[in-house]
Amino acid sequence: MKRADGRAFNELRPVKVTTDFVKFAEGSCLIECGDTKVLCCASIEDRTPPHVPEGEGWVTAEYSMLPRANRERSKRDVSKLKLSPRSAEIQRLVGRSLRAAVDMKKLGEHTITVDCDVIQGDGGTRTASVTGGFIALALACEKLVEEGVLASSPIRHYVTGVSAGIVDDTALLDLQYSEDSRAQVDLNCVMNEMGEIIELQGTGEGRAFTLDEQQELVRLCAKGCRELLAVQKAALKK
Image (cartoon, rainbow, N blue to C red; front, side):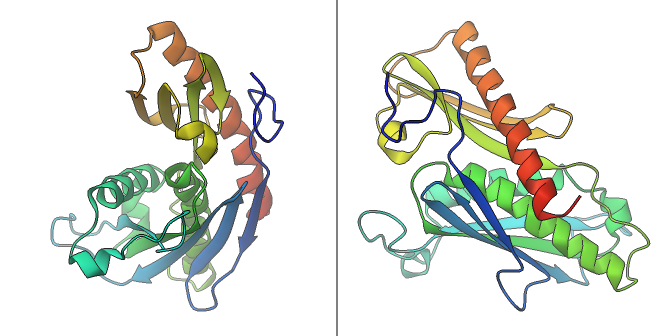
């Protein structure tokens, strides 16, 4: 099948990262994956939630989509007095993914909250939040080291996320909305820099899918994550 934007089946959308996008956050970036744009800001607090063991830190995330991030205006979560189920599920995914990147004992008794706000959504907002959220997190950890608060960065490894799916019985990498909205199968994958899977979310939205199809989608995601890793390292000048 021919993709709407002319990409190959295994090609990412153009990715652009602008670091230090926000003046006051300890770490921030604007990540643009095609027409999807997510602002990621990391904030540091010198305390931890009650459930965290003494001497260890914590990393968490919040996710929100601005009212006109999509084609039609959506209500703000605050107007509903609670997160939408979709936002709550996504921010748990982002939080789990980012925690996997950090040595909590090396972080010490600090909490880093990564806010991921979708300015414009065109598919793949949760995986863009993971990829951009990691950059903001890493920048915040660098700040702790630069200020002498930590002796070394608590980052254990990089974390990236990307989607793949089956559209018209064809496996595609990094779905934009026009593809995602009619996908027969949708899969989100988060990996570390060793190519190990941190999280895998696969759904047969239009039909069930086979193990072979799942593995094909995972291989596409692995390729995409390797390319996103290079983008992250360039943004962090590593």
